[in-house]
Image 1 (cartoon, rainbow, N blue to C red):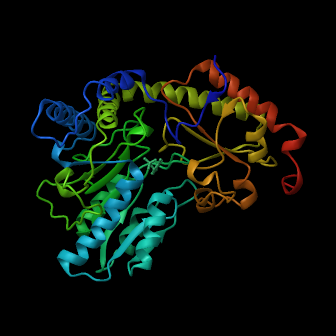
Image 2: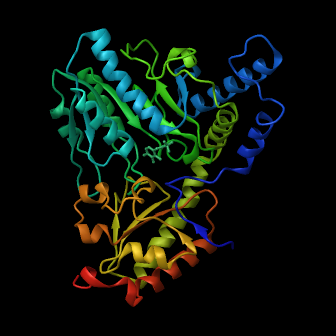
Image 3: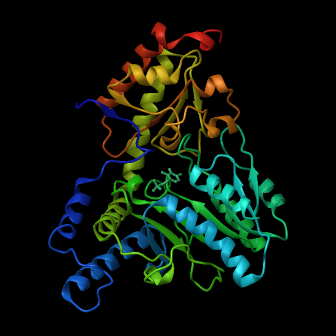
Length: 394
Ligand SMILES: *Cc1c(COP(=O)(O)O)cnc(C)c1O
């Protein structure tokens, strides 16, 4: 077993060696620009992007022409939300649109909404219950005549809770409101099919599914649904004018390969990983009966364990356990010493939130690593430096 052990697969996943192999030729001999129409180098790149587009589309049950390649989920979310708002204003004459989202969304969504609010958009932030689930009925109630879109994440990156997307989709369809989902943690991990569960727009990212950093996708429904939409990056008209800029061909090729592998393997992988996750949770609970497991018990990502250790400082535990990679919250907020908005939304106090660790297992996690991590967590949670100050009184 190699140290440190990587248990932070919600932040990013390692590149699958098969993905790297598929990418390599596009750094070396096939370096053409996919938009160069006049020669072999361009054609090679374009053909590879076409294959990747088909692979990514197939994973989610979409048509190839419904995929817009971006640099990652953050860019896709920005494009989706800002594109819908600008589209509604420009093409539908709706100057003050309303959007609905959820308190536990990733900062990519929450901060985009803040920017849109400064520009005159009204945003409603729905609460969640103690398991992190948004109530579809409350969502329906929040829809008004001005509502243009709803954005609900398919699966949460901190507590793993999976949203009731089929119900949410049915409500949005019935009310004639567009539905965007941040499915970054869901695609390649659970069944996500835009024909079975109709969403209008969906954002996801290669590096969360064993592909490379720097490639993502926006699914934009185009099966006759009219989506008033405006591009956010202008230029050479790439991606049907929806996202200009020279395509990152090696990363897109890798994204395609990662999608093809996920299509083949995710059912078995989910089964294997959930057994390991359950082993981690039961080992820790046996030794530390006071721990609290966060997130839904039944609708949860197989690889996720969010565990609160009452009386312990999570940041001190992380400093102590240099041999294992876990996190206190999402990667994006770990630079900022502020409590997780997700843990706050499910009702954890500040102190309990600061006593919480997120474990993210993955494709390459072994049983030996689970035993090692459980043992290190159990011995660290009992160390005196970990249970100091405000944490002691609990
Ligand atoms: C990682 C993540 C993002 C951001 O994705 P990038 O590709 O890194 O920009 C957005 N939403 C969720 C739920 C994520 O887990």
